Image 1: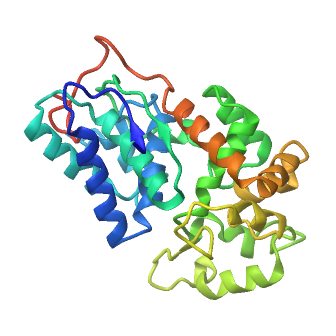
Image 2: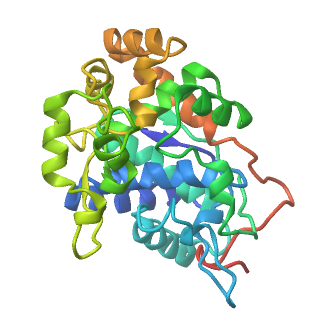
Image 3: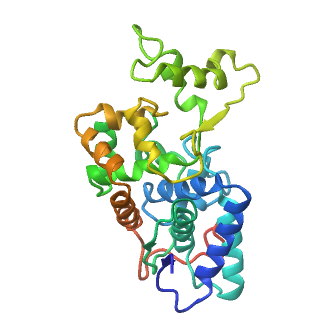
Length: 304
């Protein structure tokens, strides 16, 4: 079995999640990246408690409304659909945090063939605050040292950081997340000198200067151009060719502390797959709620 846990109280849960993910990704391969990213954004704020799935109520804005999550996070509808079907078969038995972890697992298998066991038994949190992602999620402009410090606070190592960053081989990024590298890097270099010139030219054709965007739209481009929806080894090769899209990506090759890890991952793709599986399971343990902590929500969008 590709992804598995302990769902003896609701044996159909894993099958329901897998079918929902496979159907969504078959229709839109890019949604796999969104589902993996939601899991990451959830675990780094209050731990893996599904707080990112909650909707605002009574004028209290939640994580989902933070600029780091809205509008960039996508795939919520896949999670809600799976939860609705599971709830109809096994009322208040399977937590939203469990479903969230499993949609990420099945997405990783669907676009990368990566297998891992995601332990269940987790419960859902009751709190979600709009401002908390600002101090918990690493911004796209951070360097290797800042990335390392951020992940170490969550109990993840330097090697695990570089390993998990490869999830950026799938999905898209808004131009605003890297436009500084193209047009206003610093006083001496308007364009980031670490970026390949041909690559930068192609990005400028898709991402006009912010002041010239006209209607205020924020276009998106693939994080990894070819292929954009496959969790593959090309991510690290792009970094070696100075074609990392975000500062937080390219810094992994420009920093002496992480450069050799990137090179090793280029050389041994099979070893990376095993490391990724291990790292994402470890990430999925961050401050999980168990026992009598939290609750099992009837509706992933609302606390009970």
